[in-house]
Image (cartoon, rainbow, N blue to C red; front, side, top):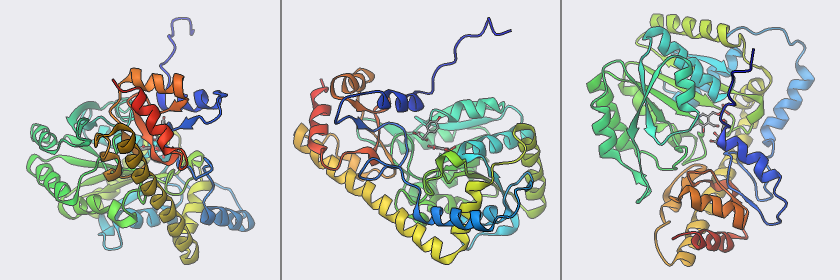
Length: 394
Ligand code: PLP
Ligand code: TYF
């Protein structure tokens, strides 16, 4: 049966977890997989989530099925967190999904059901899982220019020019904030210009928001998405709680649809849930229930927001310190963009060979495209790290 199969290529980001773990060298540095880490290199359970889990354990008296959309309280709370308090809820629907990845797939399945073989435009570069998830649903994938490696900024004019060539009915996947892998983001003026092109060309925005609260704060990070929601007739969203609630392995996310009116939203939601039924039936409950409790309880929510803000500010401090160390060690402003990027990631602009040398010669782990996870930067070893990076440059 399986004799004709070839091994599937590894997930290059997840593969780094094992490589790093098996490296015996002291002082090794892990800038690989995108999980938040504290000063001790730990990825703790957040305080409010732990408290919610305790309460859940004490009060939950059944584990019977919830239904295809999962926890409806979670869905309502996530809709507000994403779209804001002023959103027109009458035409928005949300379904709990197994992580942001599950939400991406659910939305992709919905697009496939409404427009089979439709094209989804992805930023170049984008998260490596975007193309396979879209293709798995039957969609076509094309790229729009996004990142200028030399300056570390967004190639905005080229991005818009390419989107102007898209056909009516195509979808455009936009990172809501904290672009993965580059760290370069659109400002609000740019979001407004993107909205103009979406309207002009009849394109559907598909926002992937996996790092809300990691960039500029919970509301500012959703401002682009909310601007679009106020201007376009239809919008789809995949959101993830993996990072901002640190519930990675519990698989918590939400797929959201904003339709032209409530009736269309209901039909689209029914199709999305039919897709869920065929893929996995119902999402896992535990993490979403904990997130719902955090969002609904004023005290837990305040504590969550405080801790999230501590995490965000730590990453900002690390960015500034790293950019300064690189400036000192390289005697140049080549890496200054690291300080102005936002979110977990920046792409340093090294070659694969240079990244490989950092791993073998200096025990510094980053993704092959030279993406670093800012949260993994060593607070007390910035200059050593910067020196290692400069040593592999041409
Ligand atoms: N989208 C982007 C851009 C991501 O970086 C991630 C990674 O965590 C996800 C979606 C989905 O993550 P998860 O499925 O772990 O919630
Ligand atoms: O980009 C990252 O590092 C995170 C985590 O298959 C991740 O989004 C990486 C690969 C993957 C799932 C999650």
